Length: 296
Image (cartoon, rainbow, N blue to C red; front, side):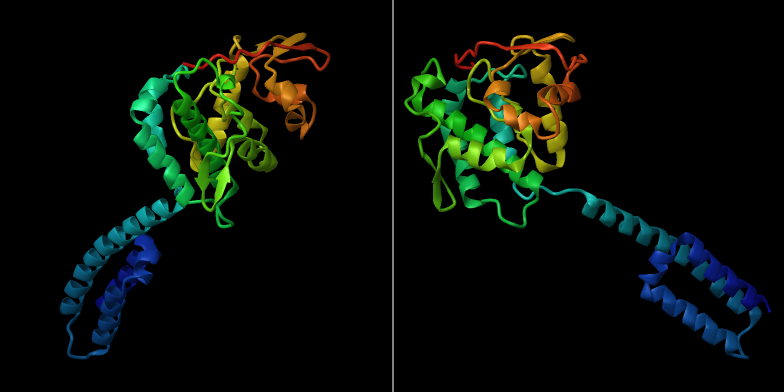
């Protein structure tokens, strides 16, 4: 009978258009049940069933397409990594007061000190915990270190060098959670223990020979790309490193934190991962003088 042919069409159409949509749409499950019931009703004519089935197939096609579209949209959104902490306020400040070259407008930061302190306060109210991923924690502490360093300079501005400030890295000036922190603790007791040597090119010491301050916040979703980019840029900057196949002149960062760069091989092995030149394992090495002038 005709109605059996159209019933097959209905079921095949549902399968082809999206079984996930059909499974989630109770209304159209009921429609199929009704058609099956009508097919058993001797009083129903083939023409009536045919028209009903065709209309239902068209409606079902449309409904399943919409359902699958919504499902894909929802899945796409859920697959996207959401930041566990919002660093956008820090990005806004960095965009305003740090150039692409990494020069910092500390006078501008001082005029907008309230916003900087609000960001630091938000850090204090949202400390990392065991539910945070490693990248979330790294992004949090790198941003915290940089924001607190800027705050330290602003507190003492105008100043020619961070080293003109007494004990700049050991002053416990900032309360995060229930504890007062200094820069030394964040760098040596937290960040360096997370086994990510590229943090040394993400955190800054407000000085010319430091890696430049990135004018956007570090975020967990992009952290690997951001750290790779700043590492490559630092090594390629001839004012801070001068690399060739047989001779390398390095920032003292590689001397001060030598063991951090030897976790998976030699220092040369680390450099060759990010350098634009291929450095020989027997290359001569020396370290450059460090310029502590303010990076403004």
